[in-house]
Amino acid sequence: MTSKDKILDIAMNLNRIGNWAADDYQGKKKRINLFLDQTNDYINKLDTSKFSKKFNKTYSNFIKNYSELEKIGRQGPKNPLFWAEDMMTWGNILTHRAKLI
Image 1 (cartoon, helix red, strand yellow):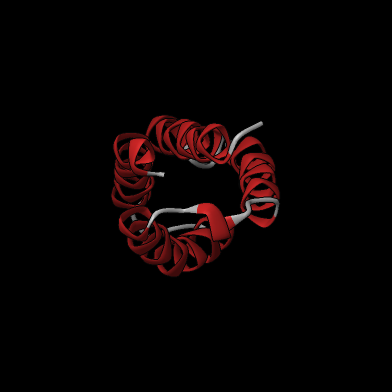
Image 2: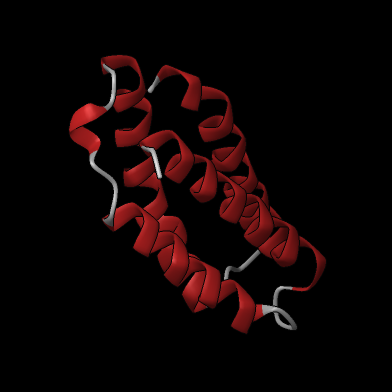
């Protein structure tokens, strides 16, 4: 699996998580946590040394934001819709920027 494929898997997970949170955070919290775990696994297995300079900047910003988003997601966001939107925004950003890898 290429780095681009892994980034696209991360992006897909973020969009799924965001959709579930927007639909019914409390009812889908177990599934959300499962996909947060899976996303962390994907992140930990990435070889970032092969990223282009342009994508590396995006990825660095994502990692900084993701750690906080993950923490909020596990604790239970005060406003699940806003949190969901942030997750989906990063999913979309990574999807569109993956071509720069």
